[in-house]
Image (cartoon, rainbow, N blue to C red; front, side, top):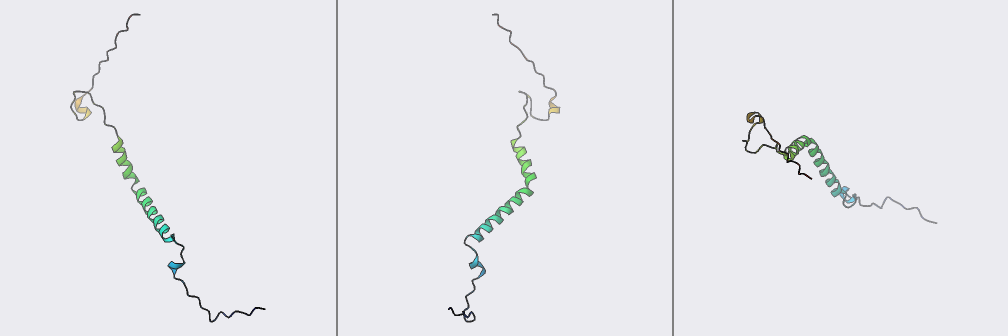
Amino acid sequence: MSEPHNHEGDEEPRAGFWATLPRGTVTRVLILLALLVGIVVLQRKAGAIAGCMNQSFMAPQPRALGTPRGDAAERGPIHVQVQVPEAAPR
């Protein structure tokens, strides 16, 4: 029927490590490693980033007109007078 095949004389050339990898695998691995490094760096600097964001989004404290800028203790208390208009007769 069929003759047994002798494998001693047939040597297939061995492909190198890089040739056996599917296309794009090395690129994907490098991109994922770069993303992982970025995540770790951001995680370690999260406290500093949060402090910086807190300072940048903090609204300035309101001050009374005509008062100098400085510490609130130096300025003293703020006195306000509210005037309500009288109701018009119906």
